Amino acid sequence: MSEGRFFESADGAAIRCTLCPHQCRIPVGGRGACGVRENRNGVLALPYYGYITAIARDPIEKKPLRRFRPGSSILSLGFAGCNLHCPFCQNWRISQVVNGNTAPGRYLSPKEAAALAVDDRQIAYTYSEPLIHAEYLIDCMKQARKQGIANVLVTNGCINEKVAAEILPLTDAANIDLKCFSEETYTKVLGGNLPLVLNFIRMAHEAGVHVEITTLVIPGLNDSDEELDKCATFIAGLAPKNSWSFAPKAKLRGVSAKAETPWHLSAYHPDYRWNAPPTDPARLIQAAKRAQENLRYVYTGNIGTTPFAVK
Image (cartoon, rainbow, N blue to C red; front, side, top):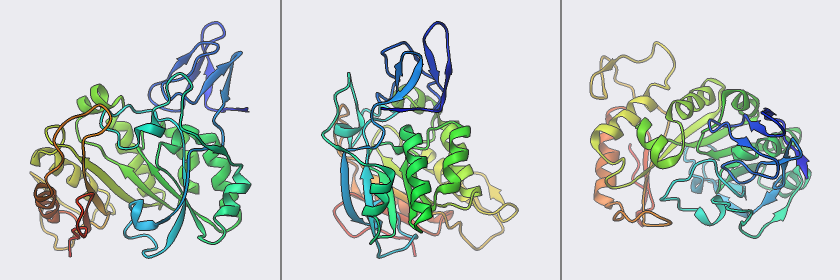
């Protein structure tokens, strides 16, 4: 059992976790919304420190990262729990920890994790949400850096700025979910915080992390041209300051170049507690082509064909 760092005392013996926007007030014996951060007698305990639910060697394109070390393999470590509760989660069997129930796994120390990555020279923290295990993540990333191993985050980016400021300098590349561009959807459907996610993406970009963005396109929820245009415009705005001039409706004005932060548009299929119809591949490709107005690199995924890439 390890002790956490990101918390403060609340009333009585309760504590308040300061990791993410939930700011969970956790009574003695209780756990936060993520299911993996616990109050043990007034101290934040981490019963899942180093608990790995999946270990695999993946092509880096599966993360998905298409512009970072293409053609390489990467050691992928999966975790338990998540601070969002997306009803359409594609990895819900490991992400949703309820009453201490989680997928089978094993404990892996930071040194053991780095040792497993010695051939690939890079580790992806992925599958479920790694940032809710921030203390373990920081320890792993430091160990990897000592051995010249690259750190890759695959994350929802819904984390407080203080925590992000510790993790991002240790991060070499990240694929960050931008699940939609609606604060209402983030709050009411996902249990997240859009402004905080946007801030995390900006911080990663400004820290020199190689950033790629993924949006799971869900019919009837986030697939309108208007909402996808807002996502594309935001991603294009990650270009260096003073490089871009924007016109309304996601049109670039006065520039011939395109922003180079890659955007992955991924097809949804019914899973967990959401029963919208699967994403139409033709709609996904149409959305990708529309994004060419702003972005140089747009990819489609989960449609059973070769990913569409903007040339």
